[in-house]
Length: 436
Image 1 (cartoon, rainbow, N blue to C red):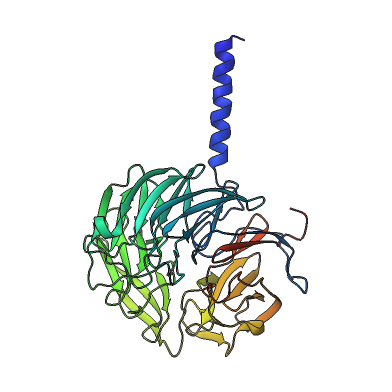
Image 2 (tube, rainbow, N blue to C red):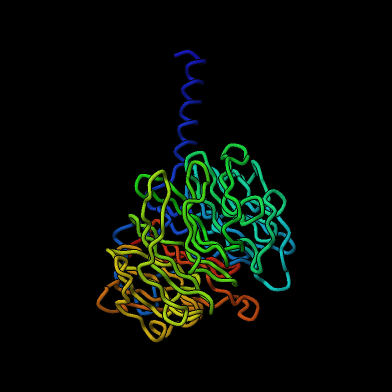
């Protein structure tokens, strides 16, 4: 074989290896709420009960920066956002041992003295990373291997958005060649950007109301019409916009909040379940009725006031026709609702197994993982007939409890490991039950 052929073969092998390294593995958690953006892991063979002191801890990464964004796991790396000093940026660490690989600052820290930081979960796709910063809504595309910025825009400068009280916290959706985001600005409440260069494909006007949300978009197809659905702020509520044009197809303004509209909406078939915390929040189940030509009416099936039922920000999981979540503002009392009728199957009057404060919820291999703000981790058997606690344990404390009190990131289950972000720390536990 000639030298030229050998070099060509080596080039193809290296390109193939690089391409393989970019791919998302079956057990990865590459974006907000996991592989399918529904809060559910696809993994099997996980522990169905934990030892008394919890699953074995493998390692803890430190110094990640202030933030309550949930990490993402893909291609052998873990990605997240954090504020270090006066800068808000993106970090990458090694999945095997938690060692830092790179940190890229993108924006000024919105309020260094309040220890709030970013709530965005990075979105990984084809070797690239997509994020939104907390202060100016800098939306950026980075190389996942190096942290080098490919392009960046700003919700404030490019979409006329005003920074919400808790900053910008949505996690973008990658759909083919589009980046779907929710700037909630005068030049676009929802927008689609080109993956290649960040240029605007379409932007949905900020109507029928106004107000920023903190929720992240999901894609749905209802009666053959592709759409993006997202919870926005007061005066707007839940909206569905056409995936190809950004045209507003429908909205349901009854469930939202003037303080913070956070939970990701659940859509299945033509049914939509939404919930929101705070005194002006609540929960609702609606059905979308097609009128033809891509137009819809919204039929309310059931509505609950905030005193009756609400999810603050811990996420809601749809399993076998039932929705599970933490109920009551800042309390995380487990609850279960029938997704078809909206009927409450059960709701607890306290946190599970001593859990207190907000509860962030994830599902994996037949179990619900409830992570409470007071550091209690609970494993629950999902059952519409009643709550059944399987196991619980106490998470390691923050390295400065007085400074870092917002223990809100959702649990992440990836490749046999449970990841718990606690501000500038990330804990990794073995939930596979064997050596990893």
